[in-house]
Amino acid sequence: MRRSSIFVALLGAVLTLEAPALAQTFGPRSRSSWETPQNFAIELRIGSFSENIDGQLGLAGRGPFQEIFCSTRDPNAAAGTAVGCPLRFRGGLEFDWQILRLGPVGSLGVGAIASYSNATARAPATAGMTSTDPTVWRRTAQDTSLQVLQSSIHAVLRVDVLARRIRWLPLAPYAKAGIALAPWWVTNGERNARDPITNEDAIGLSHGFFLAGGVAVMLDTFEPDVARQWDQTSGVNHSYLFFELNYTYLGGFTRRTLDVGGLAWTAGVAIEF
Image (cartoon, rainbow, N blue to C red):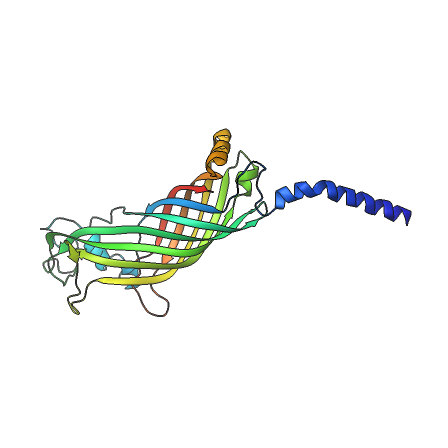
């Protein structure tokens, strides 16, 4: 009994000494003593614009989007004079609420993205077009544009344990998954284009899901003193450069919608505060 009592006493003493360290490492925010509370993140995003309109119709590479927005802009050129789709960009913002700190591993939260993109080309002279008969469809001198305002609400898992604990490996991988909405409209000159059959404006609302995975490089590593001062004066805990691949399906769940989503890349800067 005496030996057991001594063992229990020693174990209690060790746990008492280790309690502050464990609380600091696995506490609710898992931050250094000088860090301000961290609850949110903001990303400034720019990436490629992608769509699956022709693929949705089973006409990948020769459908209406390819014919209009990926062929020549010369008003006198025939349809089907393809030059390839130019690189088009999507710009946007993301705001995340980091609800739960997973000890030293990372954070789990919810986020929202709003972004804008468009594709512009010379408008066709007639409603009918076919690449097999290039005399049917020619360009006008007027531009037509497909404009997309894409948004998502998603869960975010950020794993920052490497970036926070290993100075020479400042990488923080992350993953996102959620639902996506995309109002879209087609302009013809200064007004909305109209459906030649229904005479309605060419506008719509597409919906689906959003998936993304990427890696962020923590910039604190390169200037730790500046990062610490920025945290203490402005409340910005960390700053990052990031790159991600994302896939957005916008073809609809219960009803079919125009799939103005697809596989794309995104890069940008982020801060946590």
